[in-house]
Length: 233
Length: 242
Image (cartoon, rainbow over all chains, first blue to last red; front, side, top):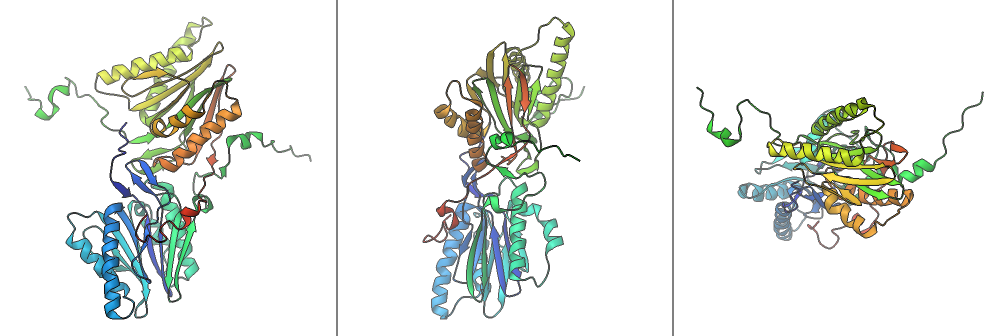
């Protein structure tokens, strides 16, 4: 059986970015695979570009890392020259320039999200090819296929921070349930005027979906539980 | 007289034959070991459709006759076809009504012939099979691959299990494992597969074969551990890494 253990590292992935009233919530799974093998089950796909702008990475692990490294480098210089934090729009457009001008060689889809004092919370989707699309919410990665219907129904304008984060965690968890290339833990990053908060939701803390069962320590525990007493009326 | 299209080449026959080229709905690893009273076998209940985890309640282990258990990975429709062949085999065996019944060794031999002959016709059954059983006190555990490679051993695995489970079994298996130790060892293998095999699903069954017969457990899920401190913030100090 061809297990393709020598394929390049790819983050199959589910990535999400959602705006809410006051900022943005970015979310991602944590699975990096080489072919069918899970090379890293707890990766961090939400990467910092500046203090107030983060990017969700999907596709080739190497390509997305090098793009974010370049953009972090340019943005650092830009921030010094400008004398104040870069805006989300500038960060996203820098990502677009790298993605577009190297479109033949790169295979990575990115979601840039952050907060600045001029425009508040903003999300920009940058799919393969280097198109830039500003959106109230964006989904990407292989797991996103399973979420289009979900977001069409569940997305609402003007959510609170908690509602937005719960939506993201629920969505990543649903994608993990069906996409073999996504898995592990759900990571979220919330960015607003007050700063940045990182959260971590391990696999066993997520709610159970259809055909999923309550996890046990072992079959032996199930076999050893006594059967319920018959009722006596 | 029609010219055969060149692309069909030397592999076509007179009639338009069907040929399995690639699998569609697949099951992942099966792991099995011999223990004190017989055989223990474990398989998850996933049927993947490419990278989609499409079906999550598929039984990939079935009892064969009175003495054997068959577990399969690979194309599920081919597994169902094999079950159908074995059904016929057992039926004809019962019809003899001679007090004899096919044991695991015989079933394994039959499966080997079926798989190898299909391979010779370039139309394989795209499955890896694990056959275990107990008859007259003798424990038997064997494997057949989709090209007809077959062998017996004290512990076997298919698919990813070959790479992840067999090293664990080589270290920790020993003669005369108790039922509890056997189950715990299989669960250890299945948990590793859950972490590291993309097509694994967290819902599994463990089957037991002894002289008394075959029992397949109810489906259940395993707890997983994510509490390493390194997991909560892996990129501290190395922004942009993974």
